[in-house]
Length: 94
Image (cartoon, rainbow, N blue to C red; front, side):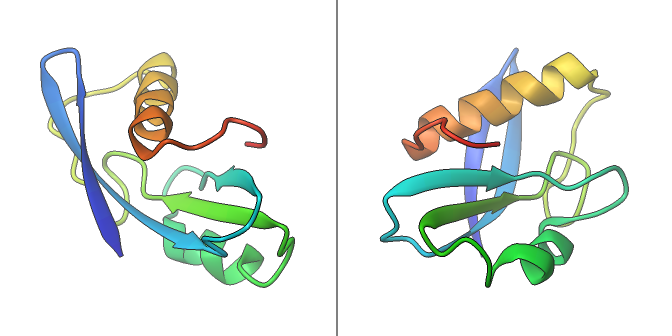
């Protein structure tokens, strides 16, 4: 597991993440649902679609990513977008 600190609207969000197939030519971020985490998604998808670099994250407040504040759906989307920019990911498939 790796971790990146994302700064968004005067808050810092430590985002826990894993990457599978790091040398693959295309990026794919796999987002979990409410009350879930990246490990569940990784267990379901890690062996599929080997042509993609899989990026699994724990959204703020889930799994190993703490959350210092209440977030809206739009805020979660903005944090994920900032995370992908910080990681240098190509936004091809979500």
